[in-house]
Structures are given as structure tokens and as C-alpha cells.
Length: 163
Image 1 (tube, rainbow, N blue to C red):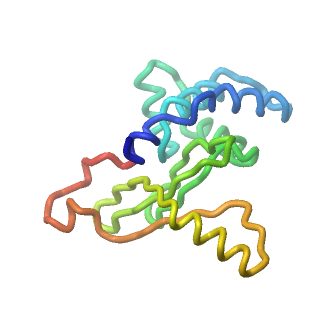
Image 2 (cartoon, helix red, strand yellow):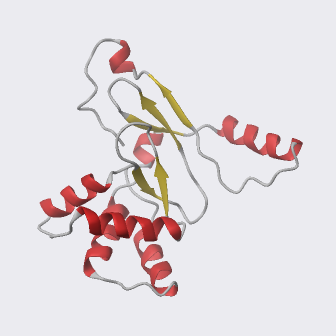
């Protein structure tokens, strides 16, 4: 299974985990907030607030972008989401796996495509660096910026999967 296939859905049980964490933190379980949680639970990799609102609207749910942003802020504060700032355009969000499993991203500077990748050698390097520097790494993000294969070959990847 490729990394892209692995991140096509959120970690198993993420939505339930998020609902429990929200309840334990004393946050209301409003229907709009839970709709955002369930949407994120069905999609594993990098959605913008606008994309979440649009997908919810397509399902017949009237959840505005402001409500989505408020929900994302709460979820991020609780450590339930990772935010990816691509440098251009809006931030993207993805569920944080409670187990700590994670992946990194490649961002095309030409078309904006965002692709996930995993690299065990990179993870080993981070652990070695932390040990060498006597530093406890609690979280790390790697975003490689460059040009995707479609753009390298002159094809427009703008319509390609951005997550």
C-alpha cells in the first residue's frame, strides 16, 4: 500500500477519539462541529476550511466557513489536527493519529499539489539528531517544496489530487 493510499482516510476511530476528547475538554458537541469532525474522519490528508465547508454543503449540511474555522481551531488546540501551511493560499488540515504515526508532505511550487510521503530513514535521522543534541523531539513536520512530476513534464497537475 502506498503512502497516498494509507492517508486516503483518517486513522481508524479518529472521529470517535476526537468526539471523546472534545467532550472531556468541556466543549459542546454541536451538530455543525460534529459534522466537521466526521468529515475530517472520512478524509485523511490536507483539506482547507473552504473544502470542508463545500463538501459539507454538498452533503446538504448548512455549515459556514466561519464555523469550520472555529471547529478547526478547537481541534488543533486539543492536538487532534495537524495544520499544514503551504506558503501560498489557505492552511490545510488533517487528523492527527492518536498513536503518533504520521507522514510528511511534498508541495509543488507550480501547481500547488500536495502529496504525502513516509520515509523510515528520515525518522531514524530525526531520532539520531535528537539523541546527539540531547533534545526531546515532541513533534516534527517535513514539507518538501519543489516541482511535481506532472509539472516537470509540462502537464498541468492543478486538477490532480491535492491531498
